Image (cartoon, rainbow, N blue to C red):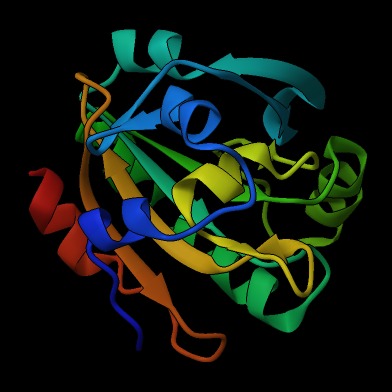
Length: 177
């Protein structure tokens, strides 16, 4: 299992100039942005704003995963779904983010064994993943990671995972409680 502190992640070199990179993340704070998502429960595509989500929740729990239609993605999404009700009971909104498009998310969600109670978020322009430090530039997809973001848009927890280690969700529940 890999672990990266938020400060290390923010200091990583990226291809963009410093002022552009700092617009989304400044000292472990995420600035507002809107991301496209797929909501399976009503089969809709929605623009999700970080600030609007945090107006109705104590935390955002952002799960970054590599690609739809992979065995690891199926396992990751199933694990998140198994804990979605607990997150929501704690006023935490789970989000699953990859660089796949919303249409790909829709096709992927239809193949899963159970309906999803959380949005699949698309970062197909790879901007948000790049700013979070999860973008695998060689493969063009996100690395696996979990972030907890509080109402002040501060990253209060972050952890990177390798491709074989399952997400450890129980400690997240304890951290949010």
